[in-house]
Image 1 (cartoon, rainbow, N blue to C red):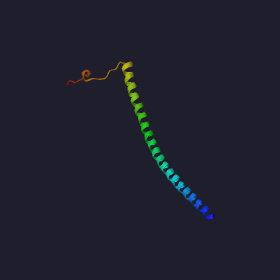
Image 2 (image 1 turned 30 degrees about the vertical axis):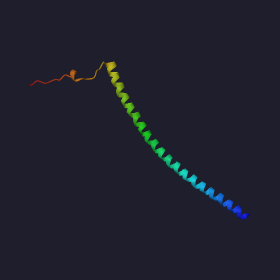
Image 3 (image 1 turned 45 degrees about the vertical axis):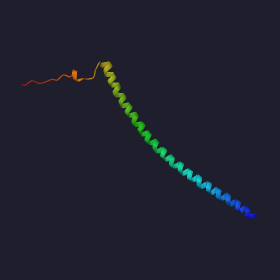
Image 4 (image 1 turned 135 degrees about the vertical axis):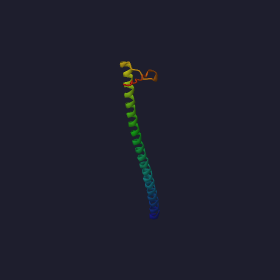
Amino acid sequence: MIGRINAVLTVILVLCALALVNSQYQARQLFIELGRAQSQWRQLDIEWSQLQLDQSTLGKNARIEASARRDLNMVPLTPQRTQYLTMGAK
């Protein structure tokens, strides 16, 4: 009877040990995946900041150009509208 109880307890102990090893392995895998996800998040955050900066810069230039056209009646310079000045000899 005691031998049978010891065998059952041994099997239970081995199963618990295997479950512990498996859960530790899964925890390590999840930790590695978390590190990769955090690294990717940092990279995407850097790219997002760069895109926001680019958008801000482009928005300012477009707004200045629109204001110059609307308020000051300015138009882009074209080769047909260019005038060249020459200096005569003294």
